[in-house]
Image (tube, rainbow, N blue to C red; front, side, top):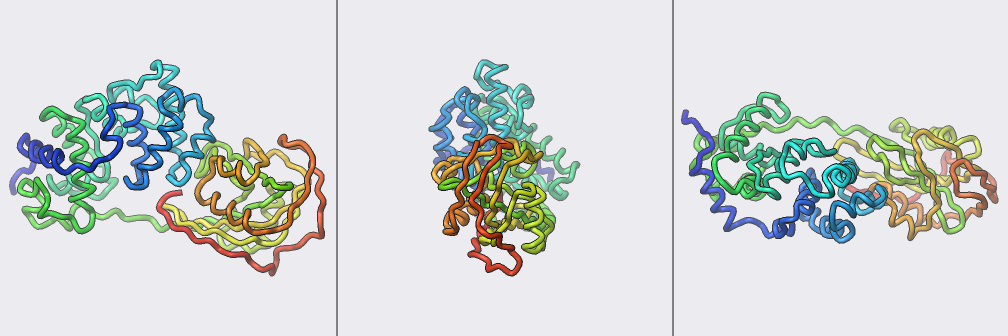
Length: 400
């Protein structure tokens, strides 16, 4: 069997193809390291077509590292809504603050220094260092791993340590063979995204098929081995819809966890399959004995990468707020104000359902501070058992 390795000839063929056929993407028209960094973070686990409008809006609001560092995290989350994987936004914000405090507002120009910043893994550091600064830094993402697995007959399943070590060794060897390290890394990713796809690869259009081990040995459909995905876990959440005049009560979650730091209608996770009565009891335990839970307003279902999420909404009258370990801040907000809060897409859908439900407005007076006493004009309590369920919204997306 021939020894398929990175060569200068392979590199030249791929770069020539990239120069002719690369997609015209907005972050390829700038040399600004900050703009390139933001694009690389957004592109992780997210398709290019989805990222483009988010990237443009993000840079309009936060045009440089200092602007991002000075922003409040909820504002960053608000612009991130719909991209999912909110830890990316949190780490982007933390890294910007570290860059301002430690590096004078300028991104470090080498991968080793970038790796010390929050949210910079080996891939992101290699991408920014090579594309923005021209360092011969390697990178491996899903596209590059697939291309290398086929070109160089790399065996093993995704996540296998020996396989990962081999892929990174090949990436280091290939990027050091010549100039234009940023273009080389982008060419590999471009080939994987547009030609050497996971399904239905276009081998006849591949500029390096004559140098591809999998093509030579008829193994293109075998490599790489498919990832064995764990079954999605059911996740059920009871959501409280509390009204005060034209405003709704929102809670900002404590940092950490799936939706850490995001705003939401007050909610509590329950056992999947819980009845309306069980969910009502869970809301009372979480919000306190002053909470009175009424009818179900409906449900929102959303498919996340690893979870099948169901949000069940209930009308709740709340006489007073109390401190909760899962909440770092309370706020009453109108529908217009809520649109500017950093909520997950799933919770934004839930709020749209609550807003449009047309339920009664509850008059509440008192302070907005956490733990403040609130007086409520309370109509007779309605138990949710057997209550009619409102409309259900269904949304499918690969990320929260």
